[in-house]
Image 1: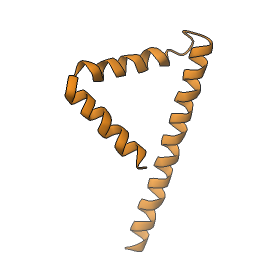
Image 2: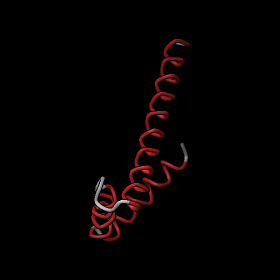
Image 3: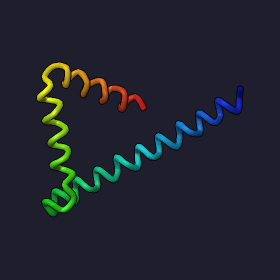
Image 4: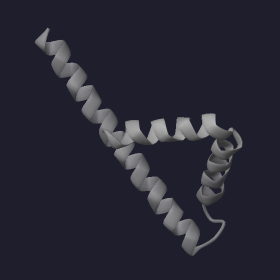
Length: 74
């Protein structure tokens, strides 16, 4: 049982590292896109995602808040 727990802990660590790397890349692409508009398209994609949440009204807002709460509790 200990090996399963250790394996899950290691897998969780890898996934957390991959997620943090992804977020760092997104942030870097946003900065690049702000400095050089239209090079990566990340700002447009983020705008589309935010617009989708706001279009769904209260349900979209609740989903966004739940996502932020879960992500913040990493």
